Structures are given as structure tokens and as C-alpha cells.
Length: 251
Image (cartoon, rainbow, N blue to C red; front, side):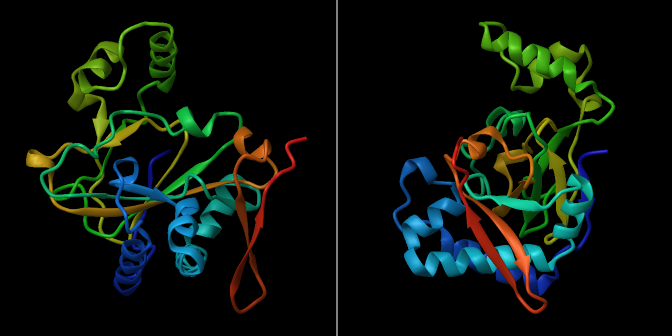
């Protein structure tokens, strides 16, 4: 049942290295559109050859962790990195501007095939720094999806705590849960898991995190099937991980 916590998937030393890599990957010119977030496709665009080295170092860390094997078991397929949606984000202390309201990754990933989000914080979250707040697994996600579809046709909003209380007819504390997660542990969920950025008093402490969005080689999301975006297939020759970058023909 999602979300799943993969405890200590990365060691403290690995978390430190991952944080250094993420900080070095942010664009030098912090325009408003990526003030608090960037993705793997941006790294090459802004960092050039050095960006490719940073990106592959980050992907190597994922493959060397338990995460890749978990992805294989859950997907029952060859996992691939969805480059445009593998993203890293940071929240400044005391800020709410970078907090995301309740949403499904399926709103931009699509729902025609399963995609996984391996969410890795580089600091402890859930108490002092903002983690992720989830709709409890026992709550029927179909109620939210129906309300979301009604919203697209001009119905009431669906993204706030008050909206969830209206949709489910229950107080918010009975509807949501926020796991306390240590740095280097991983929150794993799929694209129809409702979640938001945790709201903490005064915005909470600094947080840097990365989202490895992983898809199925034989059942890519539509925007990858069309050839719009590149994906990466991890390959191991017995000593090191390499990545085969591909783009579908769209036919």
C-alpha cells in the first residue's frame, strides 16, 4: 500500500554527496520558472558537459541503492528514468511559495501506464522541514478523481484541505497522514497517490529533495511514446552503470 518508506536507502555519506550534486546542478541564473525546481533535462541545458557528469552521478547513486531493484519488482518490467520528470526541489526556511497543493502526479504523467516516484529528502522531514502529506490509503481515491474531473468542467476546486473535507465529508486529520522520514530514506508512491507539500508553522526549515520518476520500458507514458521527451535505460556491465538514452519515433 502506497506510500512506502524505504528506510535508509542511502547512507549519510551518500546523502551528503547527493546534496552536493543537486546543489551543483541548479541553474546559475535562477529565473522565476525554476526558482525552486529543476529537472534532469535542464542540467545539460544549463551546465553542458559538466551537467551530464552530474546527472549520471546522481543516476548511478540511484542504481547502486536498493531503489532500482524495488522498481523492477513493483513494475515487473525494465525500469527507465523519465528525464523530463526526474526533478529536484528546494524550500527556503519560512517560505510557502514553493509548497505544492494536493495533486496526483498522474495529472502530468498520465494514467495509461504505471510510473513511480522515488522521493528522496537530503534532510530529515516531517517535523522541522516539510515532508509530503498523503491522502490515507483507506480513503477511496476515486472520490477525488471524480471531483477533479468535475473541477475541469467548472466545478469546485479540489486542491485544499477544505476541498478534501468537502469531498470526503470528514475532518482533514482523519483523511491525511505525513510520514516522518530521515535523510536518505525514500518515500515511494505511484502516479495516482494524492499528496501535497506538508504545511509546517512559518513554512518549516530548509529542504532539498529529489524525485526519481521511473517508468516501464514496455509501457511508457504517452508523451514519451510520442518522442517528445528522452528517457534513459540503465545498463550494468558488471562493474559500472551506464545509461542508454532513447527517444521514441512517435509512430
